[in-house]
Length: 407
Image (cartoon, rainbow, N blue to C red):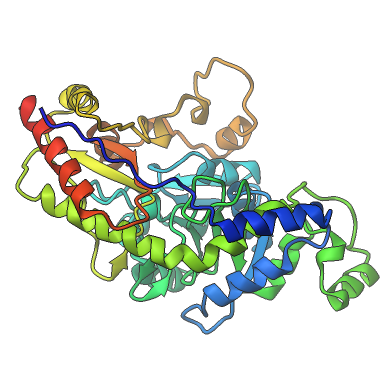
């Protein structure tokens, strides 16, 4: 029996210079900064580029990726009753951010192989109530950014990106986050760009950014001219949502950012080696990247092509061979109990009233792509930030043997 004994390097990578920078920060006693993280935000602005309309990036380092999602929507005027189209196959925070501001999620189905929404699936559910599309670059794989941007422009809706797992990924050479009207990134300690906790919102419209800042940016962090203008208008107050960031996390991110592209290149090289090793196995594979996409493989998703009821046996066979996996999305979001108020029994849920008022019935939706993928994939952490072809060949051999053992 094959046994996979290789292990990735420690992650996140904390270089000695990073540890020293944190120690220096602590010795300075500068661990709570009401002015935010302007140095990190400048680094992020340099990392990102202009969007297709030539608008410069306006980053805001904030408490979490979920807060960043809320910020970009609130900044653009999304609120109670507004419809936001997104994926039913994603981590729940994407949808809970929509619900938290009183808006209504509307689900566009995914492509079963890639796990991503498509321009075609979004076009099928756009309605006069649609205010925005929130696309998710799941597992670090870019959506068809160009197609979705074109569709949103044609239909007059905003295009937002949830890039919480895709720092540095590219589509047609442009980084994710640089396509939409705004984007949100998570920087918690397990993400490709990892701090302790935190995230950043990436704006293109200064008026939208200033609107969002009123919800969570301390006045000391505002440009003095902006603070004066808002103060004179009577808009500078303490009615905020507690989105202050962690100064230590900002230091970690500043140190990690210069290494991100190199680590992503290693992830991609390892994924390519693994994909080649699975090429002749009809029972399990990895989705091919769509043309123009350069994913970064925050997580690696294996697609089980056998019967869904045999997936647990496949997972057990992998475990026996030293390959640890999990099911990242066991239930697509539209089938979650707390997202369906009709006949619900359980603790009170904040968003049930708004969903009932909007007349949505998610449980009645048939989203075959999301439903199929939830029953046919296994995921694994993929923090292989150093190119290691021998480990990937060994991993592929163990996966193929596990699949064939239950065929």
